[in-house]
Image 1 (cartoon, rainbow, N blue to C red):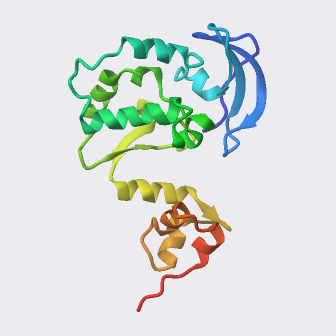
Image 2 (image 1 turned 60 degrees about the horizontal axis):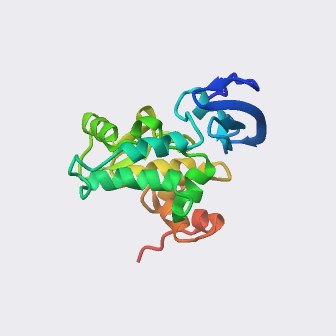
Length: 207
């Protein structure tokens, strides 16, 4: 994604008023972060693209207002898909959630459209949801919104994540095969706490 956002100080986007840039960029250096003042009075650092595209419309207060209106009349609060949706919200919005630092803490948001379970459910049912699939973000530097999400197997999801990890110019999926394993071998090693050097250089010993 090129940084096509054209935001100036004083521009308004829904409840957000643009202030100066914070100086921070996304890991791929293609999008900037900027401070925005919300109508509720709070100031928050948000990815410009997220605001410019309309995926983020407030500091989070709008999400809370919408959440108050949500109830469980759909009778699906114990279903698998409901817990997937709830997990997304927790990772993106709840600072007390252990995985928040990897999601909301680095600018990964959930679009306002999906704050309500019903809209998320309709999207899921129309876009290939199955009990054997998990939700996957196409671009890991962007949030949860319809055009950036899909349903995949755990194997496919791990392979996609492996393609994003590189060491000395070689992606993890390629190195995993070179070392004698499945495409997601190195991703699994890193998740266990291996150093990136060890993960990329230790061959599988076949007896």
